Length: 109
Image (cartoon, rainbow, N blue to C red):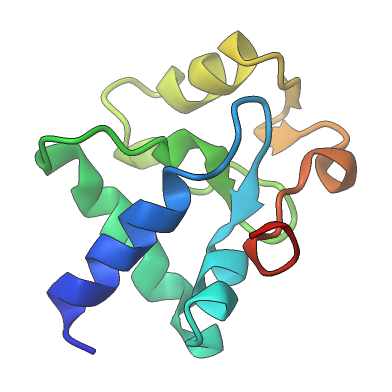
């Protein structure tokens, strides 16, 4: 699979993450059949700001619920603000009740 094709598949799955829920880089990579590619999922989401169709990249966090991608948003608090606008509580850059908000595409698609 080419990098461009992989990135598009990441965007397609990320667009399916429901409002008020979060997933992880690894969960998307596993869903795409490339479990070792969670870092590449992060690269794809980092590049998503430059594509015309919006990708809710703020809903993708690391496997522990940490907002590790927050530095790739326009403002340093943008990711937290977007999550909180969806009713997701964030404390010290970590999703509160991460397990109950976690959306696993392997189980839910």
